[in-house]
Length: 184
Image (cartoon, rainbow, N blue to C red; front, side, top):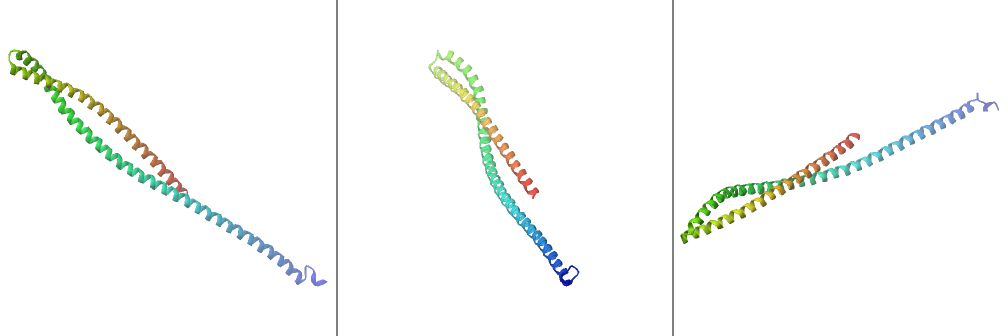
């Protein structure tokens, strides 16, 4: 069987066919491996996109909450500033009335000594004593107002601190979100 040896044309074809089959199997395996890599990369991209969508929604929700909180804080600050202005004006009025009350007290004492001789002066002395009592009660109210000022000031400081903390949290979330965007 001289035709079946390696030098024969049929022997070359069978070796060539085997080599082509090996090459085809190698190319097919390589193509399948590339296809799997593309599929995995696509899956990873989809997963990352889903995570980014969740992060966007979270940042958007926090941003809207922060905006709402800022709006609420601004309203509270305006109300507190209005109350502070009102209390200051009342305090100023009462301080002026207190100075007048002190002079009226001394005047009332002088009238009381004069009223012993006249009933009309006695009525004036009684009125002066009532005015001095009113001034004392105004002093108490003034002290209470100052205490309220302190409470309002503390509340404003707490509110401002909360706003600052929320702003820092939002900035941190935005930074994390930007980092995740840049890594893609």
